[in-house]
Length: 372
Image 1 (cartoon, rainbow, N blue to C red):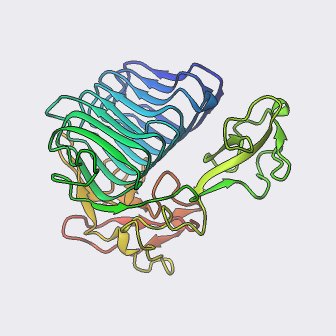
Image 2: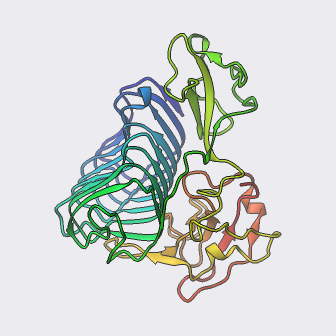
Image 3: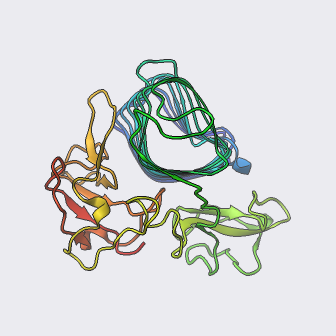
């Protein structure tokens, strides 16, 4: 599904058990996807590019509970806003340009494996003793984190922070210190400072997009002639001008790709500790990378807490497991080597590795994308 230049592209009312996949929304000036009392629904491989990079990406309204979001790329002013909702799972995301995580009232959400590159990475205002969100494996390159009147937030896994980051924090057991942005109890994550992934992305592509017939990577494509706004080799691409700002009438436009470069060491293949390169699968059915060992787990703060693998996610709609998105015992899962939305490509079912059982997580069928 694709849409272009709507104030509100997809709007869900009081419904449940929806599945939405492979959606590219371009030029929204309002909400890309708006929900109101949506529950137990599943979104995968979604791209939302705001009009002039403005608008909202996802906007989850009243009582939008227990939804699952996987492989999300959003470039808007407010990429993922949640209001008065509980227990949503957000896995493998890249948020660029504005607020990344924006929560107002209620909580207990899980954000697993996020790249946030914008002026305000995290904005949480709650005032409820049930805050209890968990943010795990996040690479944050931004100016400020704002957390007000919140409780029992946890930062887990690896958390990398820009050296210029400032934190304005209040509440009880917030998990992050005011001003200095240091992890504190109840957070148990590994903090990695001085992250810089400004050059991590592929950027303007250096060869023609095989799907988009109007791409001219050398000379640019005139804005006024473009009609193929959302036809690309992958959903991690969008149009920019030569200054990497929104392309407009009279300008030459280029395709920008937010997947990590093959040479990147900041967000590509680093999920074990955000510092060193993960080991790689040597051959099919050989031992899985150590980053996805059965003992590399975290526990969230859902109403019924879940313990799961930190660096993998469940395969949905395979009739195995409970379909909640996190990788638990006896489920089929995909390894997450990268920070952010992109985790590789190709037929992962042909590339299984030998999973090493842990003390809690056992019996997992683990698959790896053959190309990263």
